[in-house]
Amino acid sequence: MSFDLVLFGGTGDLTWRKLMPALFQAWRHGKLPSGGRILAVARDERSDADYRAYIREKFAGVDESKQPSDEEFARFAELLHYRRMDLAKPEHYAGLKQWLDERGADTVVLFLATSPHLFVPVCQQLGAAGINGANVRLVLEKPLGHDLASAQAINRAVRASFREEQALRIDHYLGKPAVQNLMALRFGNALFEPLWRRESIANIQITIAESIGVGTRGDFYNTTGALRDMVQNHALQLLTMIAMEPPSTSDADAIRDEKLKVLRSLKPFTPEAVARDVVRGQYRAGTVDGKAVPGYLDEQKVPPGSTCETFVALRTEVQNWRWAGVPFYLRTGKRLASRDAHIVVNFREVPHPIFPGTRQANKLVINLQPEDGLELHLLAAKGGGGNEVLAPVSLDLDFDKAFLSERVGGYERLLLDAIAGRLNLFVRSDEQEQAWRWVETIHNAWAADPTGPRAYAAGSWGPAAASALVARDGCAWAEEQ
Ligand code: BG6
Image (tube, rainbow, N blue to C red; front, side, top):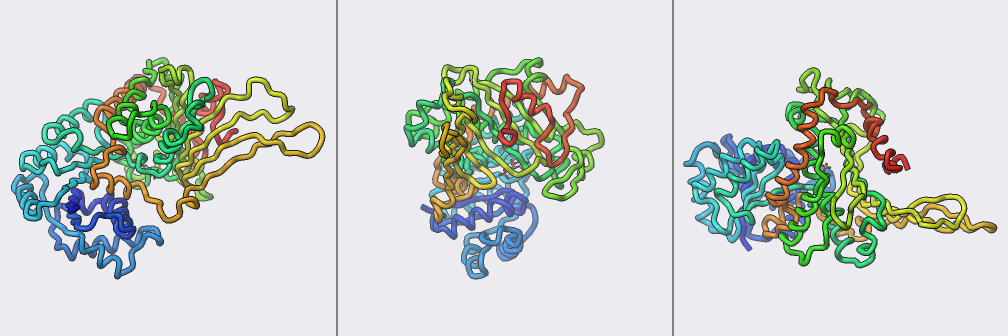
């Protein structure tokens, strides 16, 4: 199958930091279909050779195991081409069309790795130039809008030129191996399904903690905040994967229909519920990994007195028969104690304990980061005469060890899926809009509430109010258990 992959924003951060390394890995693993071309498009004048040299240099910053040798890079670079384009000029799209038509690849993937304000005009230009035939797919990278109205405006522009199934919205969390495993765990095994409901599950916690701060992205982050940056997309996508009903097939729409139903079943927030069930925080100076780090307000390009949240913890419910009354806690933040993303499914305690001592409910932990894996926590008899003493033990499954040679990174997986036209892991516009609708009520409540975010020390697990939020229900976050 021949393909052309066009990277708009071909000299940008996303392209060299994530996409090129992922494409190189796919190529190295022999997964990239042969007969492909990768065309980087950007504003400045460069030859193919200049562009290849530019990317070669950027590879120096990649993990050592993922760096190409000179010989490997030379072969990979044969796929790379460069084209100067002013994205405002129709004639430049006509030139691109000609370049694509001369070859007539089976599949054309257009990846918008540009600033989001260009999504609408670029879609219009692509449609007007006729670069939207049935063999074309458009990949959009977040942020897809700032709120519901702007997300809808992007979707309208996309729809004016492309059919829904041509538009692939990336949430790179869906490309993470642990998320594939969550689907496999739930729908490839019969073991957990009878337990996957309110009768057996006490609560579910989703944590995406980062130890990094906002770095040099202070200006972008300050107009975004943790709710838009992480909750609207990554955390809610993980929640849908946990809570969805079994789809009737593995078709993309069968899966996405079920995810959408979850989003529609999320308990709507009132301003009172936001005040009670949502904690927003902002980091102050502290210590992370043994190093002193500044507070958010002292980061580059952050305006004085900003009330932007760098932490969110919230409690919600999925209002349907399976989940009624089960708390779902979401938590994400920058400059937390460690880089750690996981989902904890806390099961109910035994109804009638007969053993003395430790009483700990079972839990299933799905680890996404730093390593992916599964842990099932049980109580077992410790032995040692007299009364039976129970002690916690865990069954650990390390996917890296189990599937050593077959691991595929998030972007690599999503790029290969985009080229092959597998849509399961891309977000449909109705899911995305529903997620915006839900988080928007939180933003509206915050806008009317002068209290602002609560302070937390960098290197901690966020404001104390986040612990109080779960303690109210008699629960604790994983690191407090
Ligand atoms: C991005 C956010 O979507 O995800 C970043 O914009 C965040 O702020 C990043 O750092 C986290 O991704 P990962 O894969 O490193 O957990």
